[in-house]
Length: 282
Ligand code: NAP
Image 1 (cartoon, rainbow, N blue to C red):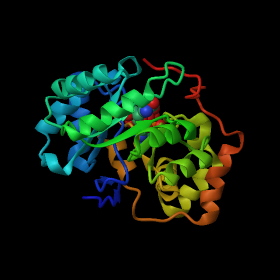
Image 2 (cartoon, rainbow, N blue to C red):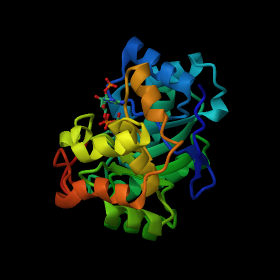
Image 3 (tube, rainbow, N blue to C red):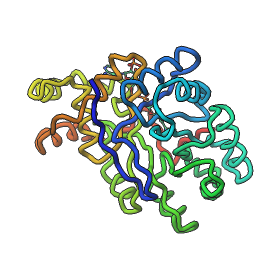
């Protein structure tokens, strides 16, 4: 069965699908097979990162899957240790070499690392990488509203997307609003709270919503993301989970059901205590 996934237009004109495949821990030959399976069943947006050490697996899956390259949206991320302008450009070149691709569709700054104070430089390097044709669209990840405001004020260029922690325990209303102010799409990392979600997938209220729609709790949570206007990128290694996660476009949650799921955010909690104002990733 082919699932129709709607597209979303980024502020620079590039279309991306409303759901993508996370790939953290999908490495090596097994990783290639999982990512290839994802592409074959309909994922067109594939998330990766220099620091996941799987750009090679992603690139191999892209070449082996029977989907034309221009229909895919491949994303990688700049690590914190390479924010300096020249290093950032060389790192993007190295990412391309690792993946053995001619270009990335998206390249994003993985974390702002504000204490290092180099994320504006990194953003200028991404702007240059786009001019050079290394990447079609540039964005950020884990940027708080003040980080977004600063790069836009200093360069005049708004990111096409901001990939942030977002799941029912952390619905990120203020962050989503700050992204929207710049025309920046919100992408949700750990959309399932890493599959455990502190119990949200087992919660009776979510099971009841799932039963009403004839869906699984996982599908309900992923649908919640898309109705918030965010793009979830669930990681799933097995074809079964990948298929289940993609099949979320034939039904609609009511406003009340949306509120029930958002209510898990009452403590507004980052599940791994990774506040971008403090947390550093190199
Ligand atoms: P996640 O997608 O919330 O959860 C992944 C876990 O859920 C895996 O253990 C997976 O198991 C399980 N799962 C997936 N589909 C399922 C289903 N239908 N039923 C039951 N279990 C299911 O967590 P994540 O990997 O942390 O986040 C997703 C992606 O976001 C990452 O892979 C990465 O690409 C990106 N990310 C970015 C950042 C950042 O700083 N920018 C940080 C974290 C993550 P199976 O594999 O066995 O299916």
